Length: 127
Image (cartoon, rainbow, N blue to C red; front, side, top):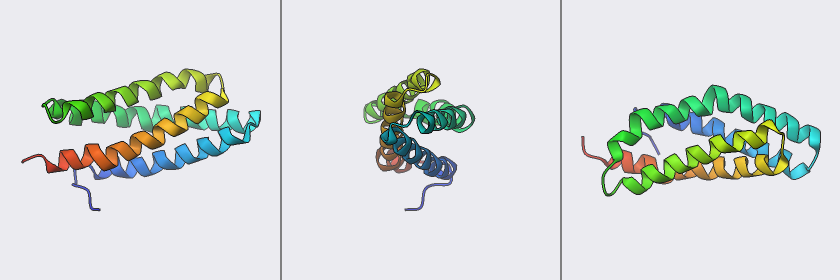
């Protein structure tokens, strides 16, 4: 599906986020402390350089336009996911396998939500 020009950069970033989520899930599933630590470090680096800036763009440029009856639930879900992913960084800093697994699960679910629900809703808005 071709995204609108406004959303294309964010969609491309979603692909990278899915790759990160998969890497984190694999590392968490091993139970190996070294693999978990490496994946936590990679996730924190990606969070600082890619995910947090991505979230800020969405929160600054997309979500303010959706505070309507129909869009409010999408805004709330997006904000809740962003908040939860930010909070999981504490566990990643401690290199916790459970935090890594949850970060992976939530990041994957969040990207799918945005691609399947949030972005189509935005694209269907008039003008």
